[in-house]
Length: 321
Image 1 (cartoon, one colour):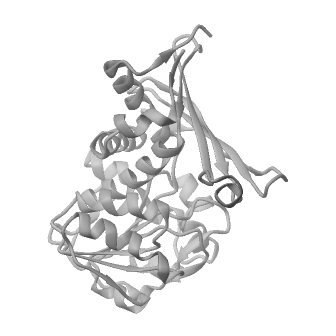
Image 2 (cartoon, one colour):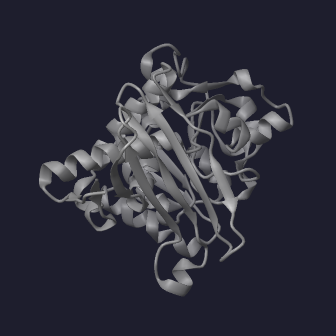
C-alpha cells in the first residue's frame, strides 16, 4: 500500500491537476462510466462532530475507493488544527486490495475549488469581468484563486457575514493584481460570476441580487437543511450540478424541489455540458447556476492523481499491508 501524507500534498497537487481530474470525472459521470455510492453522513454525538463516507467507482479511470471524514467544529479553538478532517482510501478494482491512503484535507479544498472553476469554464459568459464572492472563510481563498484562472477578470467584489474576514479575499485579489471592493449583497448585481461558499442554513443571496447573464456557483450546501440562495433564483436560472441525486436531496436544489419551484428534470449534469450532450449556456442574458454538492468521485480523482505524482517524485511511502 502507498501512503501519501497530508504534509506532502501541497508540494504535489496543483490547481491545474485538480481541475483536469475533476473535469474528466464529471464527464465520466455524465456518460455513465462513473458513479457515486450513497453518502453516509452522521452526527456522532461527540464533539458536535459530523462524520461520514463518500465513495464511488470510475470505470473509465479504474478508480475505486472512498473518503472518510467530516467536520469537527471545536478543532481550531481547542487543538489548533482545521475543523475539516478527511482521508481518502483507494482500492484495486481488479482484486479489491487496498492501493493507497492519502491525506484528504487540502485535496478536499482543491477539488471543491476545481469543481466551481470547471463550472465557470463551461457555463460563464466568455466576457465575464467581475467576480463576486459570498463568503470569505478558509475555503473562499481556494475558490477565488481557482476561479480567477478561468477568465480575464478585472475586479473582485465580496461580502461576508463577518466583514473582518474580507481581507482574505482582498489578499487573493492582490495576488492576481486585481482591485477588491467590499459590497452589500445588493451590490452583487455588478458581478458576472458569483461564488457562494458559506455554511448557511438560510438563503443569503436573493434572486434580485443577481443580474441577467450571471453564472452562480453555489458551493456551500452539502447537507440536508443548508441553504445559500433563495429558491426564486433557481427558478430564474438554468440549473446544473455534479450529481442530480445529491443536488435534489442535500444540495442547493433540495429547497426548490421541496417548494415545487423547480422539478428534478430541471436539474442537469455539468458533465453533459463537458461531453457536448447538453448545450449549457444558450444566451448572454441567461442566468446559469451550478449546484456543487461535492461527490466522492471528485475526491477519488484528485487522490489518484496525487498518488501518481507522489510515485513520480519519490515521496510516496510504501508499506506491506
